[in-house]
Each structure stands twice: as structure tokens, then as C-alpha cells.
Length: 206
Image (tube, rainbow, N blue to C red; front, side):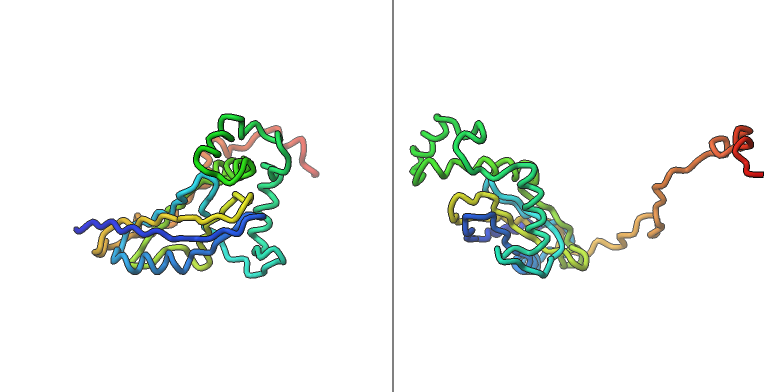
């Protein structure tokens, strides 16, 4: 059975001033198809520490911030957990050494290091997602879309998303576990646990 690895990089432009949600579903589907992998996985990973990857339903409705409603709901929750960086000293990071490092690597100003909210949100949310490939198709269910989220909104940024497809170019046979029988994960009580208790009698209505 042949095992194959196929890698591509997506180049993206974030707008700044508010977190950017990039819908990259079409590109991920095209990369999976171009890979020639029939059965395996695709890892979709951010190249950046202030960005995340999300697999979620498309919300369709878009507000005046160019965010789908579900995306803005998520942003509202993240803002409650990790408020936007709006004033100097709001967070411990960045300290003076890190600010100096920013100047050393030719950042345009100290303000570009005031993205602590983006770093913390990406830690909470995660920087990658892995999805299954079945019979040459991305297995996202009926409604899944893939989004690259840039939480860093101090300025417009050029971003990169890394996509790695791994798997076999051959069929894998029957996937059904235990002949496809539905697994019952609910509690199963023993006869002793279900036994009659005389104390029930005192609560009888008649």
C-alpha cells in the first residue's frame, strides 16, 4: 500500500482593526483532490502564533463588520474571556525586552507587539485542525467549512496557512466497526442497582 505526503501553502491577507475570518474551504477541498490521496488525513495548520484554524458550519448571514453571525458570536465570547488589547499595560506582555526585540526585527512600532489578546486567543482556540479523507473526499459532514482566523488586529498582515495531506492512494476496504452496530454508551444498571426498595412505599399516594 503506497503512502503519500502532499504539502501546500496558502497565502492570505488579513485586514487588521478587527480579527479576520478567512473561509478556505474551497482551497482545502482542491488541495485534497490534487494530492491523489484517497484515504488519510489533512492537517491544516497556522504558520503564526496569533492565528487559529476552525472547522464549523457556515452561518450565511453577514453583518456590517463582514463577519458571519456565528463568527461574530465566537468573537464576542472570546472578547469576554480575553478582552481586546486597548490600552498600554492592560496585559503584562509585552515587556520592555520584547518591545526592544520588535524593534530589532524591524517592526514598524511598539504598537505591533500589543497583540497579547491574539496570542492568548490562539492558545485557547488552537492553531490547527485535522480532518479525515475518505475515498478522495474531505470528510466534513454536510455543513463543515474550514476557517483560518487571524486574531491579531493591530494592523493588516500577510499570513500563511500550511496544509499537509497524508495517506494512501488505495482503497482501505470496509470501514464499519463491529458491522456498523450502534454503540450504546449510556449507563447500564445491574439488577441489584434496579432492585425494589421498601422506602418507596412511604411515598405512595394510595
